[in-house]
Length: 132
Image (cartoon, rainbow, N blue to C red; front, side, top):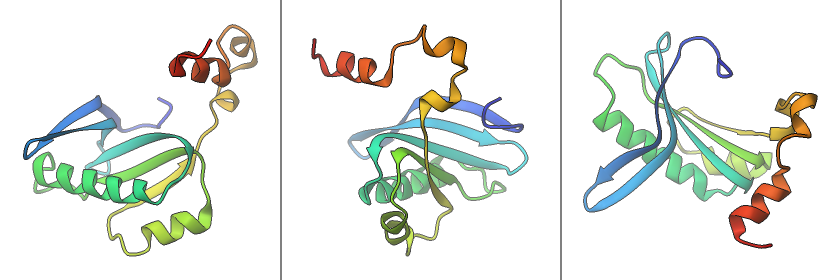
C-alpha cells in the first residue's frame, strides 16, 4: 500500500545464484501495470557510487533470469538515508538501465503516537552493533 497501486511483493532478501556465488536483493516487487520487476536496495547512511554498479548488476540478472520476454526492463531503486546529488549523477551517468536514488527518513513516516512506543534509530543501531 505504501508503494502505491499495482505493486506485487515477490520477496525479501530474494536469492540469486550466479556461478558459485549467492546474492540477495533486499526487496523485489513486480509492478502489474508497468509489467516490470522493481529491485529495491535499502542502504544505511550516505549514497556510495558502488551502489549503482551493484544495482545495475541486480537489474541485469533479474532481466536475464526472471523477466518474461513481454515484460519491460527491470527498474532499480536505491534508498539511502542521505544522497548527494552530484555523486548520484556521476554514478548513474553511463548506466542505461532505469535506476533511481532516493533518501528516506523513517521517523517522518511514523505517526506521532507510535514514535514514543518504538525504539529510536540510534537505539536500533546500537542494538545491531552489539554495543551496550
